[in-house]
Length: 360
Image 1 (cartoon, rainbow, N blue to C red):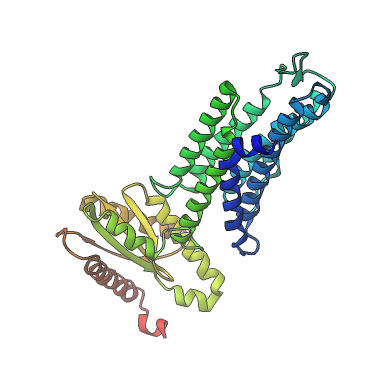
Image 2 (cartoon, one colour):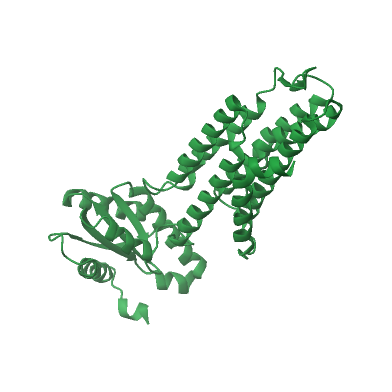
């Protein structure tokens, strides 16, 4: 059986062990994603063990009970492996309990194999025959794959490239399931582990490029994106929140945080593939416009001011159109900041307030 295990699952075991060693180095307390990555690892190891033990039981006709048991375990844990990836992708810290229901129903269906052929049975030739509910493992697994793709739009809605790796994972898992079904192979185990590793790398990279409070792209990502879109950037906008220091002093920093989140949501509302939003400081934000003309920039600025007013806040924003492709990003930022400062000075003048005193 050891030869079968290594010959059939050598790559899966190598990937799993390597991933386990990496997960052990993560010490983030309360990291919900981490425990669901561990669930993926455990599910994969159970699948490998169940298939190997089922192969052992298949070698003798008097091991029907054991073969049934290991087959039930295998059919039960395939959707759980897909579920673990779904739970990793799920936005927020509180995953709904109902997401477990399809996997648990699948377990109950296959447990009937001990007393009914409704899921599967082993015939006189020692061959597994599927029953009328024998495809529930595929249906439930496919359900979780659809959930993953749907959650991609809920969690990674801020750009064209965000979450693309999830499409790759979904395609790989579906292809592996189809190949396994027709060739009686075990590609799905290695595929689940590869998908988990891809997802782990992507999420860590994604989090590194995001501001933890607002989930907008951060300052580092701003400069990286500017270099990437260098030839396509047509305008840069710099903006901040008016009166944030006074808001913090009068109502506390929680009120200031709510203002920052509200303006971040406003920026997210006007963002799309050609308008990228960033938080680059405390209450400092930036927008990159990709192949947009000046009228589009002005319209976006007007919309931002309107949305901010509706939320009960005021912003100052300055933009600069790019006239020379060779102009460094620092020059554009400086010019946009100068335009923003003029608008902010006008705001304080109109409201009869001393900006310098509010800063002190």
